Amino acid sequence: MAKETVVVLDFGGQYNQLIARRVRECGVYCEVHPYTTPLEKIRELHPIGIIFTGGPDSVYLEDSPKVDPSIFTWGVPILGICYGCQLMSHTLGGRVTAAQDDSAREYGKTVTYYDTSCKLFEGLPEEGISWMSHGDYMAAIPDGFALVAHSKACPNVAIADEARGFYGVQYHPEVNHTEHGTDMIRNFLYNVCHAKGDWTMGNFCKTTVERLKQEIGGGRVLLALSGGVDSSVLAALMAEAIGDRLTCVFVDHGLMRKNEGDEIEAAFFKWSVNFVRVNAQKRFLDKLAGVDDPETKRRIIGAEFGYVFRDEAERFNITNQDFLAQGTIYPDVIESGKGDADVIKSHHNRLLPPEVVARFKGVLEPLDLLFKDEVRQLGRELGLPEYLVMRQPFPGPGLAIRIIGDITQEKADTLRDADAIFREEIANAGLDRSISQYFAVLTNTRSVGVMGDGRTYEYTLALRGVTTTDFMTAEWARIPYDVLDRISTRIINEVRGINRIVYDITSKPPATIEWE
Image (cartoon, rainbow, N blue to C red; front, side, top):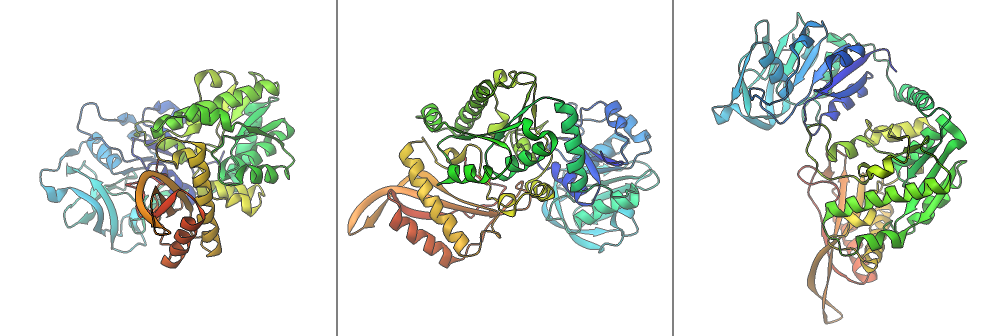
């Protein structure tokens, strides 16, 4: 582990891990812990700084998340963000109230003015856009604090007690919408916490391999391999740690993209790892027959994956002293509900049946604090080929959550063919590296069309493309009209059962990247 650590105390916001991501981008090791973590455990980490995150609550409510005031006596610098700022103010003697005037409530992009003599804003412009999201108001700030930023609507956008190293901001510096937000976090780390910046992905790789060696000991690992970036990187990491005691199990559930199962098998046979392909198409499609609710689909698939892994463990004599490993990354964790965060959608690798978990000594998820781009960086550190590192993301439930409504073999085949054309044309246009994720969705809507002077009544296909760095937020991709026209024409002409194409221009949030 790195010599210096920053602790992020999580108070339940959806994007709190972005704070940790920004800290790591600044070269400082960071861990995220729920606000309920006993303070003695936090203190054992010897943090050089602590960050309180945002959250959905109001600090003046009796049952809202609180923090033991003794944390302010440690002599450790603290940065409070949004709810974390108000919590700091409330705990240290300030007064936080619901905004009585609508003008005191701020949401979205806000012009903000900074006192650049404050260490938090040193070297930055005196004016910039910040991303606000607060309906409460600091009516009075604690003794010893000064106002160091304001907006036209709010005089106390940021507060600071520089003598004690306490800072609070009502906006979110971790999001891209806040200008120089990462610079503010960097200033906190280096100007206030005096960080050295000794954490790198190479350091993470080395320490994680060593930790896995110690945790696994002489045991074996069955790895749930989807062939995607996350599980492929995990396979390389595990192989580095335990060598031939690793068995990678790829489950073809009949909902892969066109030719994908064969491509994955061909790719991994080039590796010197134990690779097993399980053809379980009928098993999964039978379980999903007649199911149209997306959350139910995810739960069925998650459970069935678990049962397949249990069966394969029996087949390869993997005992209850051995481990199951999954390529879970942070967006999977947070969208499935972590701490006080809402469940957005359950990810299949968070839905293992208890009896499957009990079959193994433990479930290893060493990538669960990393974002997609960090996983790619780790893959390069491990020497993976670029075609695997930059592989197009594909969800574990596969086409099941890209077929709206019930799933049939015919629908899956139709979507496979349409999606293959979409992906081929995106690659032909040279857009495959600039669009982070792109795919087709077979909707449950039929519409009237005309083909060959005859009436048709067939499915509407939706196309989806997004650009993102972390998959927690995303913008819809601006695919040129001529490319969309070519894609639409080919799909209508070459794929039976589809007579209308639409393009999804919704960002995340408010939508998610996948439709289900």
